[in-house]
Length: 420
Length: 199
Image 1 (cartoon, each protein chain N blue to C red):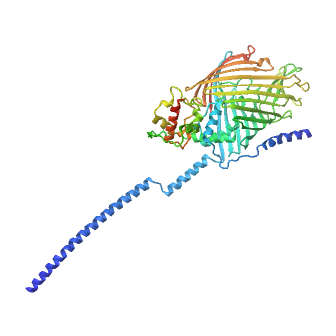
Image 2: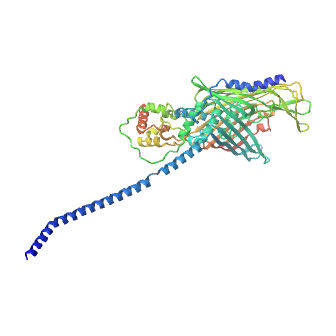
Image 3: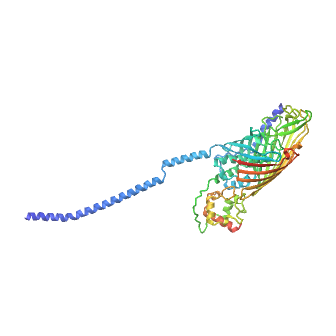
């Protein structure tokens, strides 16, 4: 009994002693469990954050790909060699007082630029036109290699637009010319040279507080046409100054232009050229034949011009004068006295801002050795600028020449011109 | 024959002799070399419109402007530096505005680092003119009854920050007038200056 009693006491004591230990163990277990749960939760949050971070941010691979794209964009944006096409085109409708109205395609003139860094540029303008008989005419308006020598000078070699005056080298593109037609005397076979083949130095430099620009050139020069009615007496028909690929008279023409800008918006220019020219074709009105000539005597060729342009806010006023003189010849196949061609125009335009309408008024007086070509012209125009490089033009020419000649025929002109 | 050879020699050598007058050709090592933005805006504003309608910067991409400006350097008789300045201006102005309709928070006390007059002279004057009437056809007149200054400050600041196309203007004003360093305080200072002098 005692033995059992002692065992029971011992068991009771052991139970009592073990009881707090079990309670403590359960408490520690719960604590640990809570900590594990908490850590698991934190881990899940970290994993979620990491997942979000990875989805919101780029990896190194992404950055590498992006850098590659940027490099490739740089290649496109800024290579050493650049190729670019610009130009202009126009279509229109002409209705003259003594004729029927006709739709016409003026010109399509793409201009190509090929440039190597800031060292050299090749420029070329083609001119496509549709003749009245439907034939397509193609011409090389100019083709030059421009070598940029320094900040103030470039060497221009090839066929270039004549630097004499302003109209031909700067204003003839249809999206720039504010009227649908060129001033009489500034077109082909007029008083002002169109283009030439040779070498040219041009650029600009400051003069005190003013700016200036210049062009100096040596070229093959023009050729002359002569006409005869009876094969005995001859007269000069016209000057072809459109850039010939050979120097038929063996004497070069020297010329140039100097422009001064005494204040912003105002430019005053003086230009000229001198050299020799010879008759290369003869038109016989009696036999209605044209023949080429050789060994004609050289004649003096002199041309000079004055021009100005002034831009003040919405007002633009400009004008120029050009005179060409061909000396006499007493020997050769077509002896004839000297002859003068001269023309001048002044033009004013005003844009009604902030609208898109523009008004233009131009006066031109062209004098030729042939009275039938003399022309005095007033042109009144109204333009609508769909954009600064896309212009609708409506103009009326009041032409005054010898009666019943084209020079006396008033006409309406409508034109859509686009510069690209 | 002898004279002919002599003439031909002169024709070829004469340009080379003239070229030697300017022997120090500047080849831009970091072509296209950067120019001065504000000076470019001035040259662009003073020269392009004399012959043709102004072509806005956004009409062409950066690479297209390079060939176009070099072409015009020859046509207009610009110097190399002038053409680099114009190119910098055009390339810096042809990026489209963001167009984000973000309301602009203006500080009540503008604390621009430099005066409004200085900022206007450096950043705005090329297009807006010294008299505020606009140096280009179509640029808004600050002195007229329809002056943009009649708009509230928040609208004006937003227009300057993001760029703005005024009706009839040949180009949109580039964001921050083309000066990336401008902040809202600077813009506020310019507006205060323009209103104070009552153009």
